[in-house]
Image 1 (cartoon, one colour):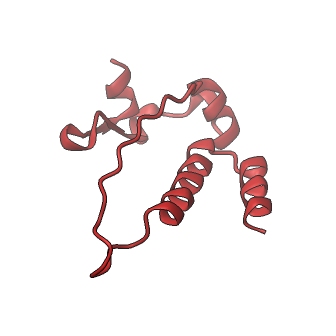
Image 2 (cartoon, one colour):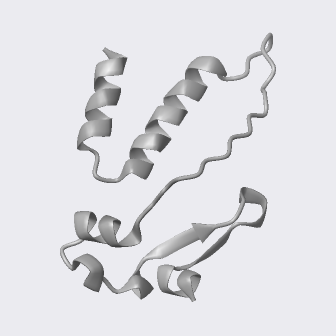
Length: 93
């Protein structure tokens, strides 16, 4: 049943980043359960490269399409330890 739900999310979720996040989270929870007295927490590192097309994303997710004001959208960049928040317009400058 979980596999069926995963396929449905992948098929109908317009934001693939959300689908990726759900699938990774599910896999990590199965493999690395919450720490207990007998089970120590583990550090997990993952690197993702996503082929993302801004124009396609805007057309699929916003009524304004590619005319969407990029100054009104937020972006988080870099690694967690050095993450920065800016608008999408600032990021592309």
